[in-house]
Length: 164
Image 1: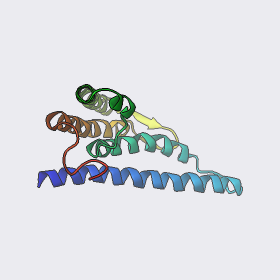
Image 2: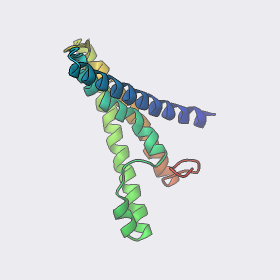
Image 3: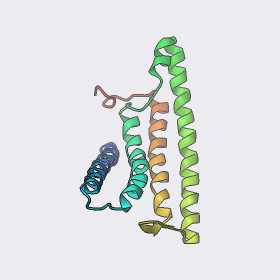
Image 4: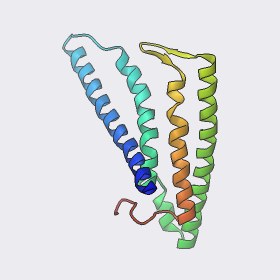
């Protein structure tokens, strides 16, 4: 039951990222078309794209790692003996877990500090600065769970991966 809910959470992040990128593509295309037709421009489009691209990356990363579709150096891993490749894979999972844990801690601190100071982003769109940091600890916590899963269960689990 918990496994299904967890996978649904990861999938929801991936769907949200896809919808975000799709909406962004439509907005940018519409803005370019409107500008070329002399209808003016929407000044907030660039800002929205600046915030949307990293957000989409954060949202989809845990899902990709869960499915073993993340970026890796397969050329290196296929050119070394299998035990060495397993060791390198395990080492990369440990480094990924450590980096994810650091981002969870510092992301939480950045949110707390920004909220405490009442910092605002003031551009075309005005909003509390901590909103920019909010996805960081959540998404990196999910990545930490995934790296832990990989460490404990040896990488790809049954039912995950690109060929599952």
